Length: 138
Length: 51
Image (cartoon, rainbow over all chains, first blue to last red; front, top):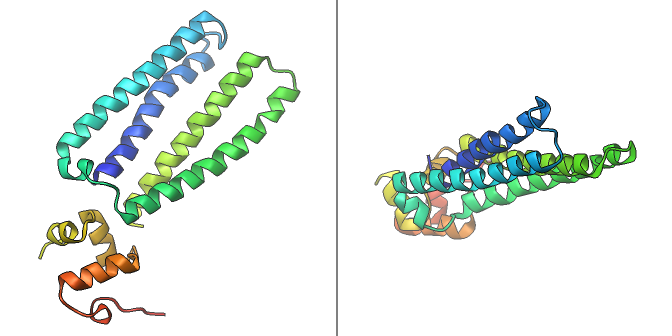
């Protein structure tokens, strides 16, 4: 597995773990979704995401040192471009969908959580697209 | 020559070379010329286009 593919897996796992915990806590009612308890949880998840991704990336670079130091080759660049295009369209649709909760009267904090969820889903779409393209040998 | 050796000579990853060999990825013209140059062969001898 190349370093870039490992990076895609790391991004996927990190996002699922950290933001899964955040949205899971909101959905299960452990936090209200607004207020300082939610803010603290969000900040913890963001910091945790950054730390987890950094640690896993360092570990991946130690297992594939040559790959991690070299620039993306043309296929990896193509996969990155295509996956970001997928993520862009996913985010576009989801953000347009924000109009629905906005117009039915959801408070601003709910809209912020929906917006964050949209960004997380778009990020997951980018990672999944990259992994699929790497696995298929595209 | 192994895939890793070829990859190093042309500045690509082993996985990209494997994808080219499997016909799952079409390299750019520049990459195709580099591969042909490594094998000291003509482009047509290394790559064929099946329409």
